[in-house]
Image (cartoon, rainbow, N blue to C red; front, top):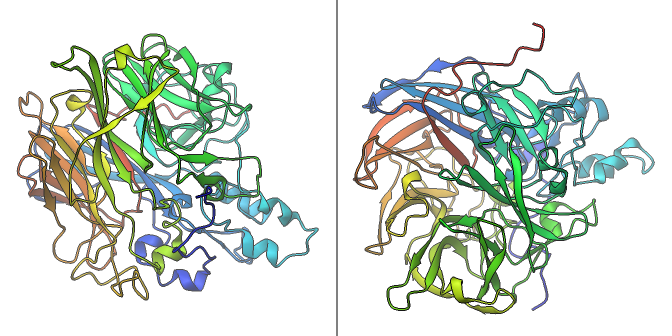
Length: 578
C-alpha cells in the first residue's frame, strides 16, 4: 500500500459560523479569568496538596478580521488549531484558586490588521472561504500559506503554542525587542515554559500567565536550528537534562540533550538519526538511554500551502523503528523494528538487566493505534460535530528491546510486544513522577472510552451521530487506572450528565511509600456544558474525593503539569526601569 495522504472515512470540509452553532459551548469561544478567584469546593481536598496545576488548551475558535468586526470572522477548523488558553489552579491548605489567560492574542491583532489569520494550521486552512471569495490578486493570497515559521523578533503572543506547560528554566539573554517583562531571577518558580510541535517555546509569567517571550532552541545554541520538534521533551530530574529532537533545513533528524540546570541552559550533545524525517509527538527515556520511536509519518514541509496534516504522509507498510541512544554522549547503540502502528504519547520506559541473559533490556510503554487507522484527521471540527465513523481506539502496549548493550547500531533487529492491557482504549497516559524510568512501576492513568455517549448530558456533540447513530458528548467518556502487574484496569465514569474528562494528572502524597498513594486530578464539564469542574480522585481507590467549581467552561485541551511548592507567587512582568 502506498503512503496515504487523503483522509478516508472522516469529514474534512470547511464549517461555517452557522454550523459551528451546532457545537457544544466548549467548542465556542470561552472567556478568560485573568484575576485569580477562589473556587467553591465540595468533598475534601488534601492539605498536603501544595502547588500549581497548569493546563493549556484551546479556547477560541473564531477570529475577527477587522477591528470593528465588519468583515467575516475566520472559523478555526481543527481542534488542535484553536487559540491557546493557559489555565492555573493554585492549591494550598485545602483550598483551590483559579485563573486563566489567552496567550495568542497577537494572532488576533494581526488578523484584524491583515484581514486573515496567519498561523501554522494542522487542519483545514480556515482562511479558505476568504481567499476563495476574493480577487486572485488581493492581499489574501498570503492566507494560502499554512505553515508559519516564527522569526527572531516575533511578539510573545504571535504564535499559537498550546501543548505542554512546564516550569521555566534559565535561558540566554533576550535580544528580541518585542519581548515583554524582565528576566526572572528564578524561572523555575516565576515562569511557565510552553512546548509545541514546532521548534518554538513560549515563556509566560507564572503569576499573571501573561506571555513574555517566544524563542526557538537555536537561541540556546545555533546548532539547534530547525523545524519539527517534540511537544513532550523528556526530562531527567536526576541529571537535570531534557532530550528532544529537531529536523534541520537539510531534512536530517537529530536528537539533542540540554543541560537545563545550567544558567543559561546549554547544549550537551546532538546526534543524527539514521532514518527519514517524521512527525513524532513524544519521546521516551530510561535511566541510561533516550529512545526515539520513529512514528511512520513522513513530515514534508516543502509546500507551504499544505496544512500540517496534509504534509503528514502515513506509511502504512513501514515498520516502526526504535533507536536507543546513550544519555552520556548521544551515540546510537541499538536499532529495532516492530510491525506498523501509530502513536501520539508514550507512558514510560525503563532499562533492566535480564536475569536469564545478563544483558540489558529496554521496555517502552506506548498508547498505540492499529496500522489501518489514520489518527490525525478525526479532530477536524467538521468531523467532531458530525463524525462519519466511530473514533479510533488505542491500546497500552509494552514493547521490548532486548540486549541493547550487545547490538551493532547499524543492524536493525526485531523488537517484540512484551505485554498489553487488553480491552481498554488508552490515550493521554500519565504516571507518578516517582515511577518514571522505574522497572518496578505498576500504574498508568489515562483517558478512555473515545467517542462514547455521556448519559444525561444536555449537549451531545454529534448532530447526526458518530457513524453508529448515537450522539456522543465527549472524545473520552471516562478515565482508567491500569496495573501492569495484574494486567487489569479500573474505570472512573463521570456522573450526573458530566462529560469530557481530561488527561488525569497523578500527584503523589509527600512521604508516600506506595506508588498510587496520592490524588488524581482531572476536569469535567457539567451537564449543561456551561462550566467545568476540577475533580480529585483517590489514587488508590480511584473514587472521587473532592471537586472545585470553575467560573467558566474549560476549553478542551490535552495536557497539563503539576508544579510543587510556591509557584508564581512573585511576578517579574514589570519592564526594566519601572
